[in-house]
Image (cartoon, rainbow, N blue to C red):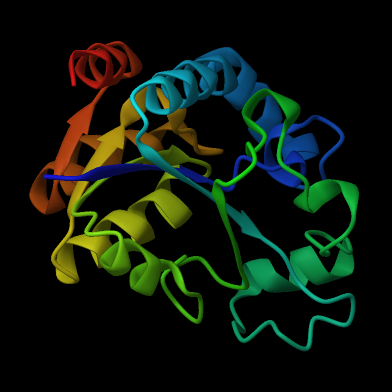
Length: 197
């Protein structure tokens, strides 16, 4: 089964203390959990194994005309002028920046399959197993895993490259939801598996 590694929303806005979302505590949790260091290890292992890598980010036009969601959290993004394409917040953190040739998907919602070319690209490349992780666990990671399962992919969540503002949200998805729609693994197991192939 051909695989890809999906790194989800590991962008400055979320994971850097200067980010407009990260500044409210998420960046601290990302640091405490070692998310970026673990993601960097997974990225290196995927590249060494010649596995496909996809970098996903949230990014809007400056006027937010491309933002469809009317959820309460969107008001906070807009009022803070967060996740605007071309600004610091939508750049990937340097520890996990894309390499030349790696696919970058910019989305305007939680689900990276919605209104993007991600599904088409995965199908064209005969990829079925999707290793994934990022922030926040209960938003982009959960949405990606659920949709991937519905679409016939095999999602595998790398637990220690995920984080959520509230640990209970992270734990609920990892223990209750992810095993029902796919599988859960760790950086250590992913690196070992990638190097064995």
